[in-house]
Amino acid sequence: MQILFVCLGNICRSPMAEGLFRHVAESRDLKVVVDSAGTSGWHVGDAPDPRGQATMRAHGIDTSAQHARQVNEEDFNKFDLVLAMDRRNHDSLTRLAGPGRASKVRLFLEFAPGRGDTEVPDPYYGGEDGFEHVSRYCITPARGWPTTFSATNNCAPPHRVRRRAMVGMNIVQLIEPQTAGF
Image (cartoon, rainbow, N blue to C red):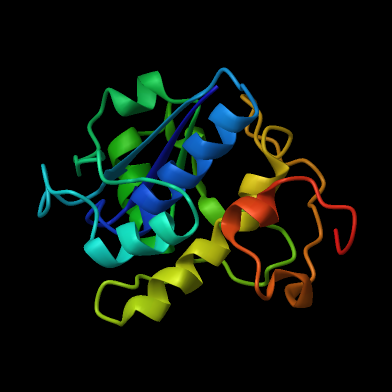
């Protein structure tokens, strides 16, 4: 399984998702490839936003070695799933993929049923709390890995996460199996 996470500039949302999912894959010894990219080329070569790095570091995940890149046509051949963080990026990716590969493009939050949201908000123009908020959007799909994602692009039944159980817990605690609240 190979999954590509995509946002606009590849310095906020998608590198956070990549870092979290890479951590999950390594901690569970999963044989998967995760990567991230942006639909724009504005930040190619840049490290993730320092606020996003700080958020992930606070949760024990290092994203400092990542560097922004732009999505290219070969990505649709390489990756089983191309997950867009919002509708605008989804539409851009669908056009770039073309009719034969567009089925690989999905909204990231399709894999977090029950959230009620369809888009992960862009924290770029806000404060540090926006990055923590975005990290929470990644938890439900990450917690269900690998059953949440399949090469056939089907969703597994969602894991239910009670918001009260999340208070005071870091990302790693939330995605590891819990007996209470899930």
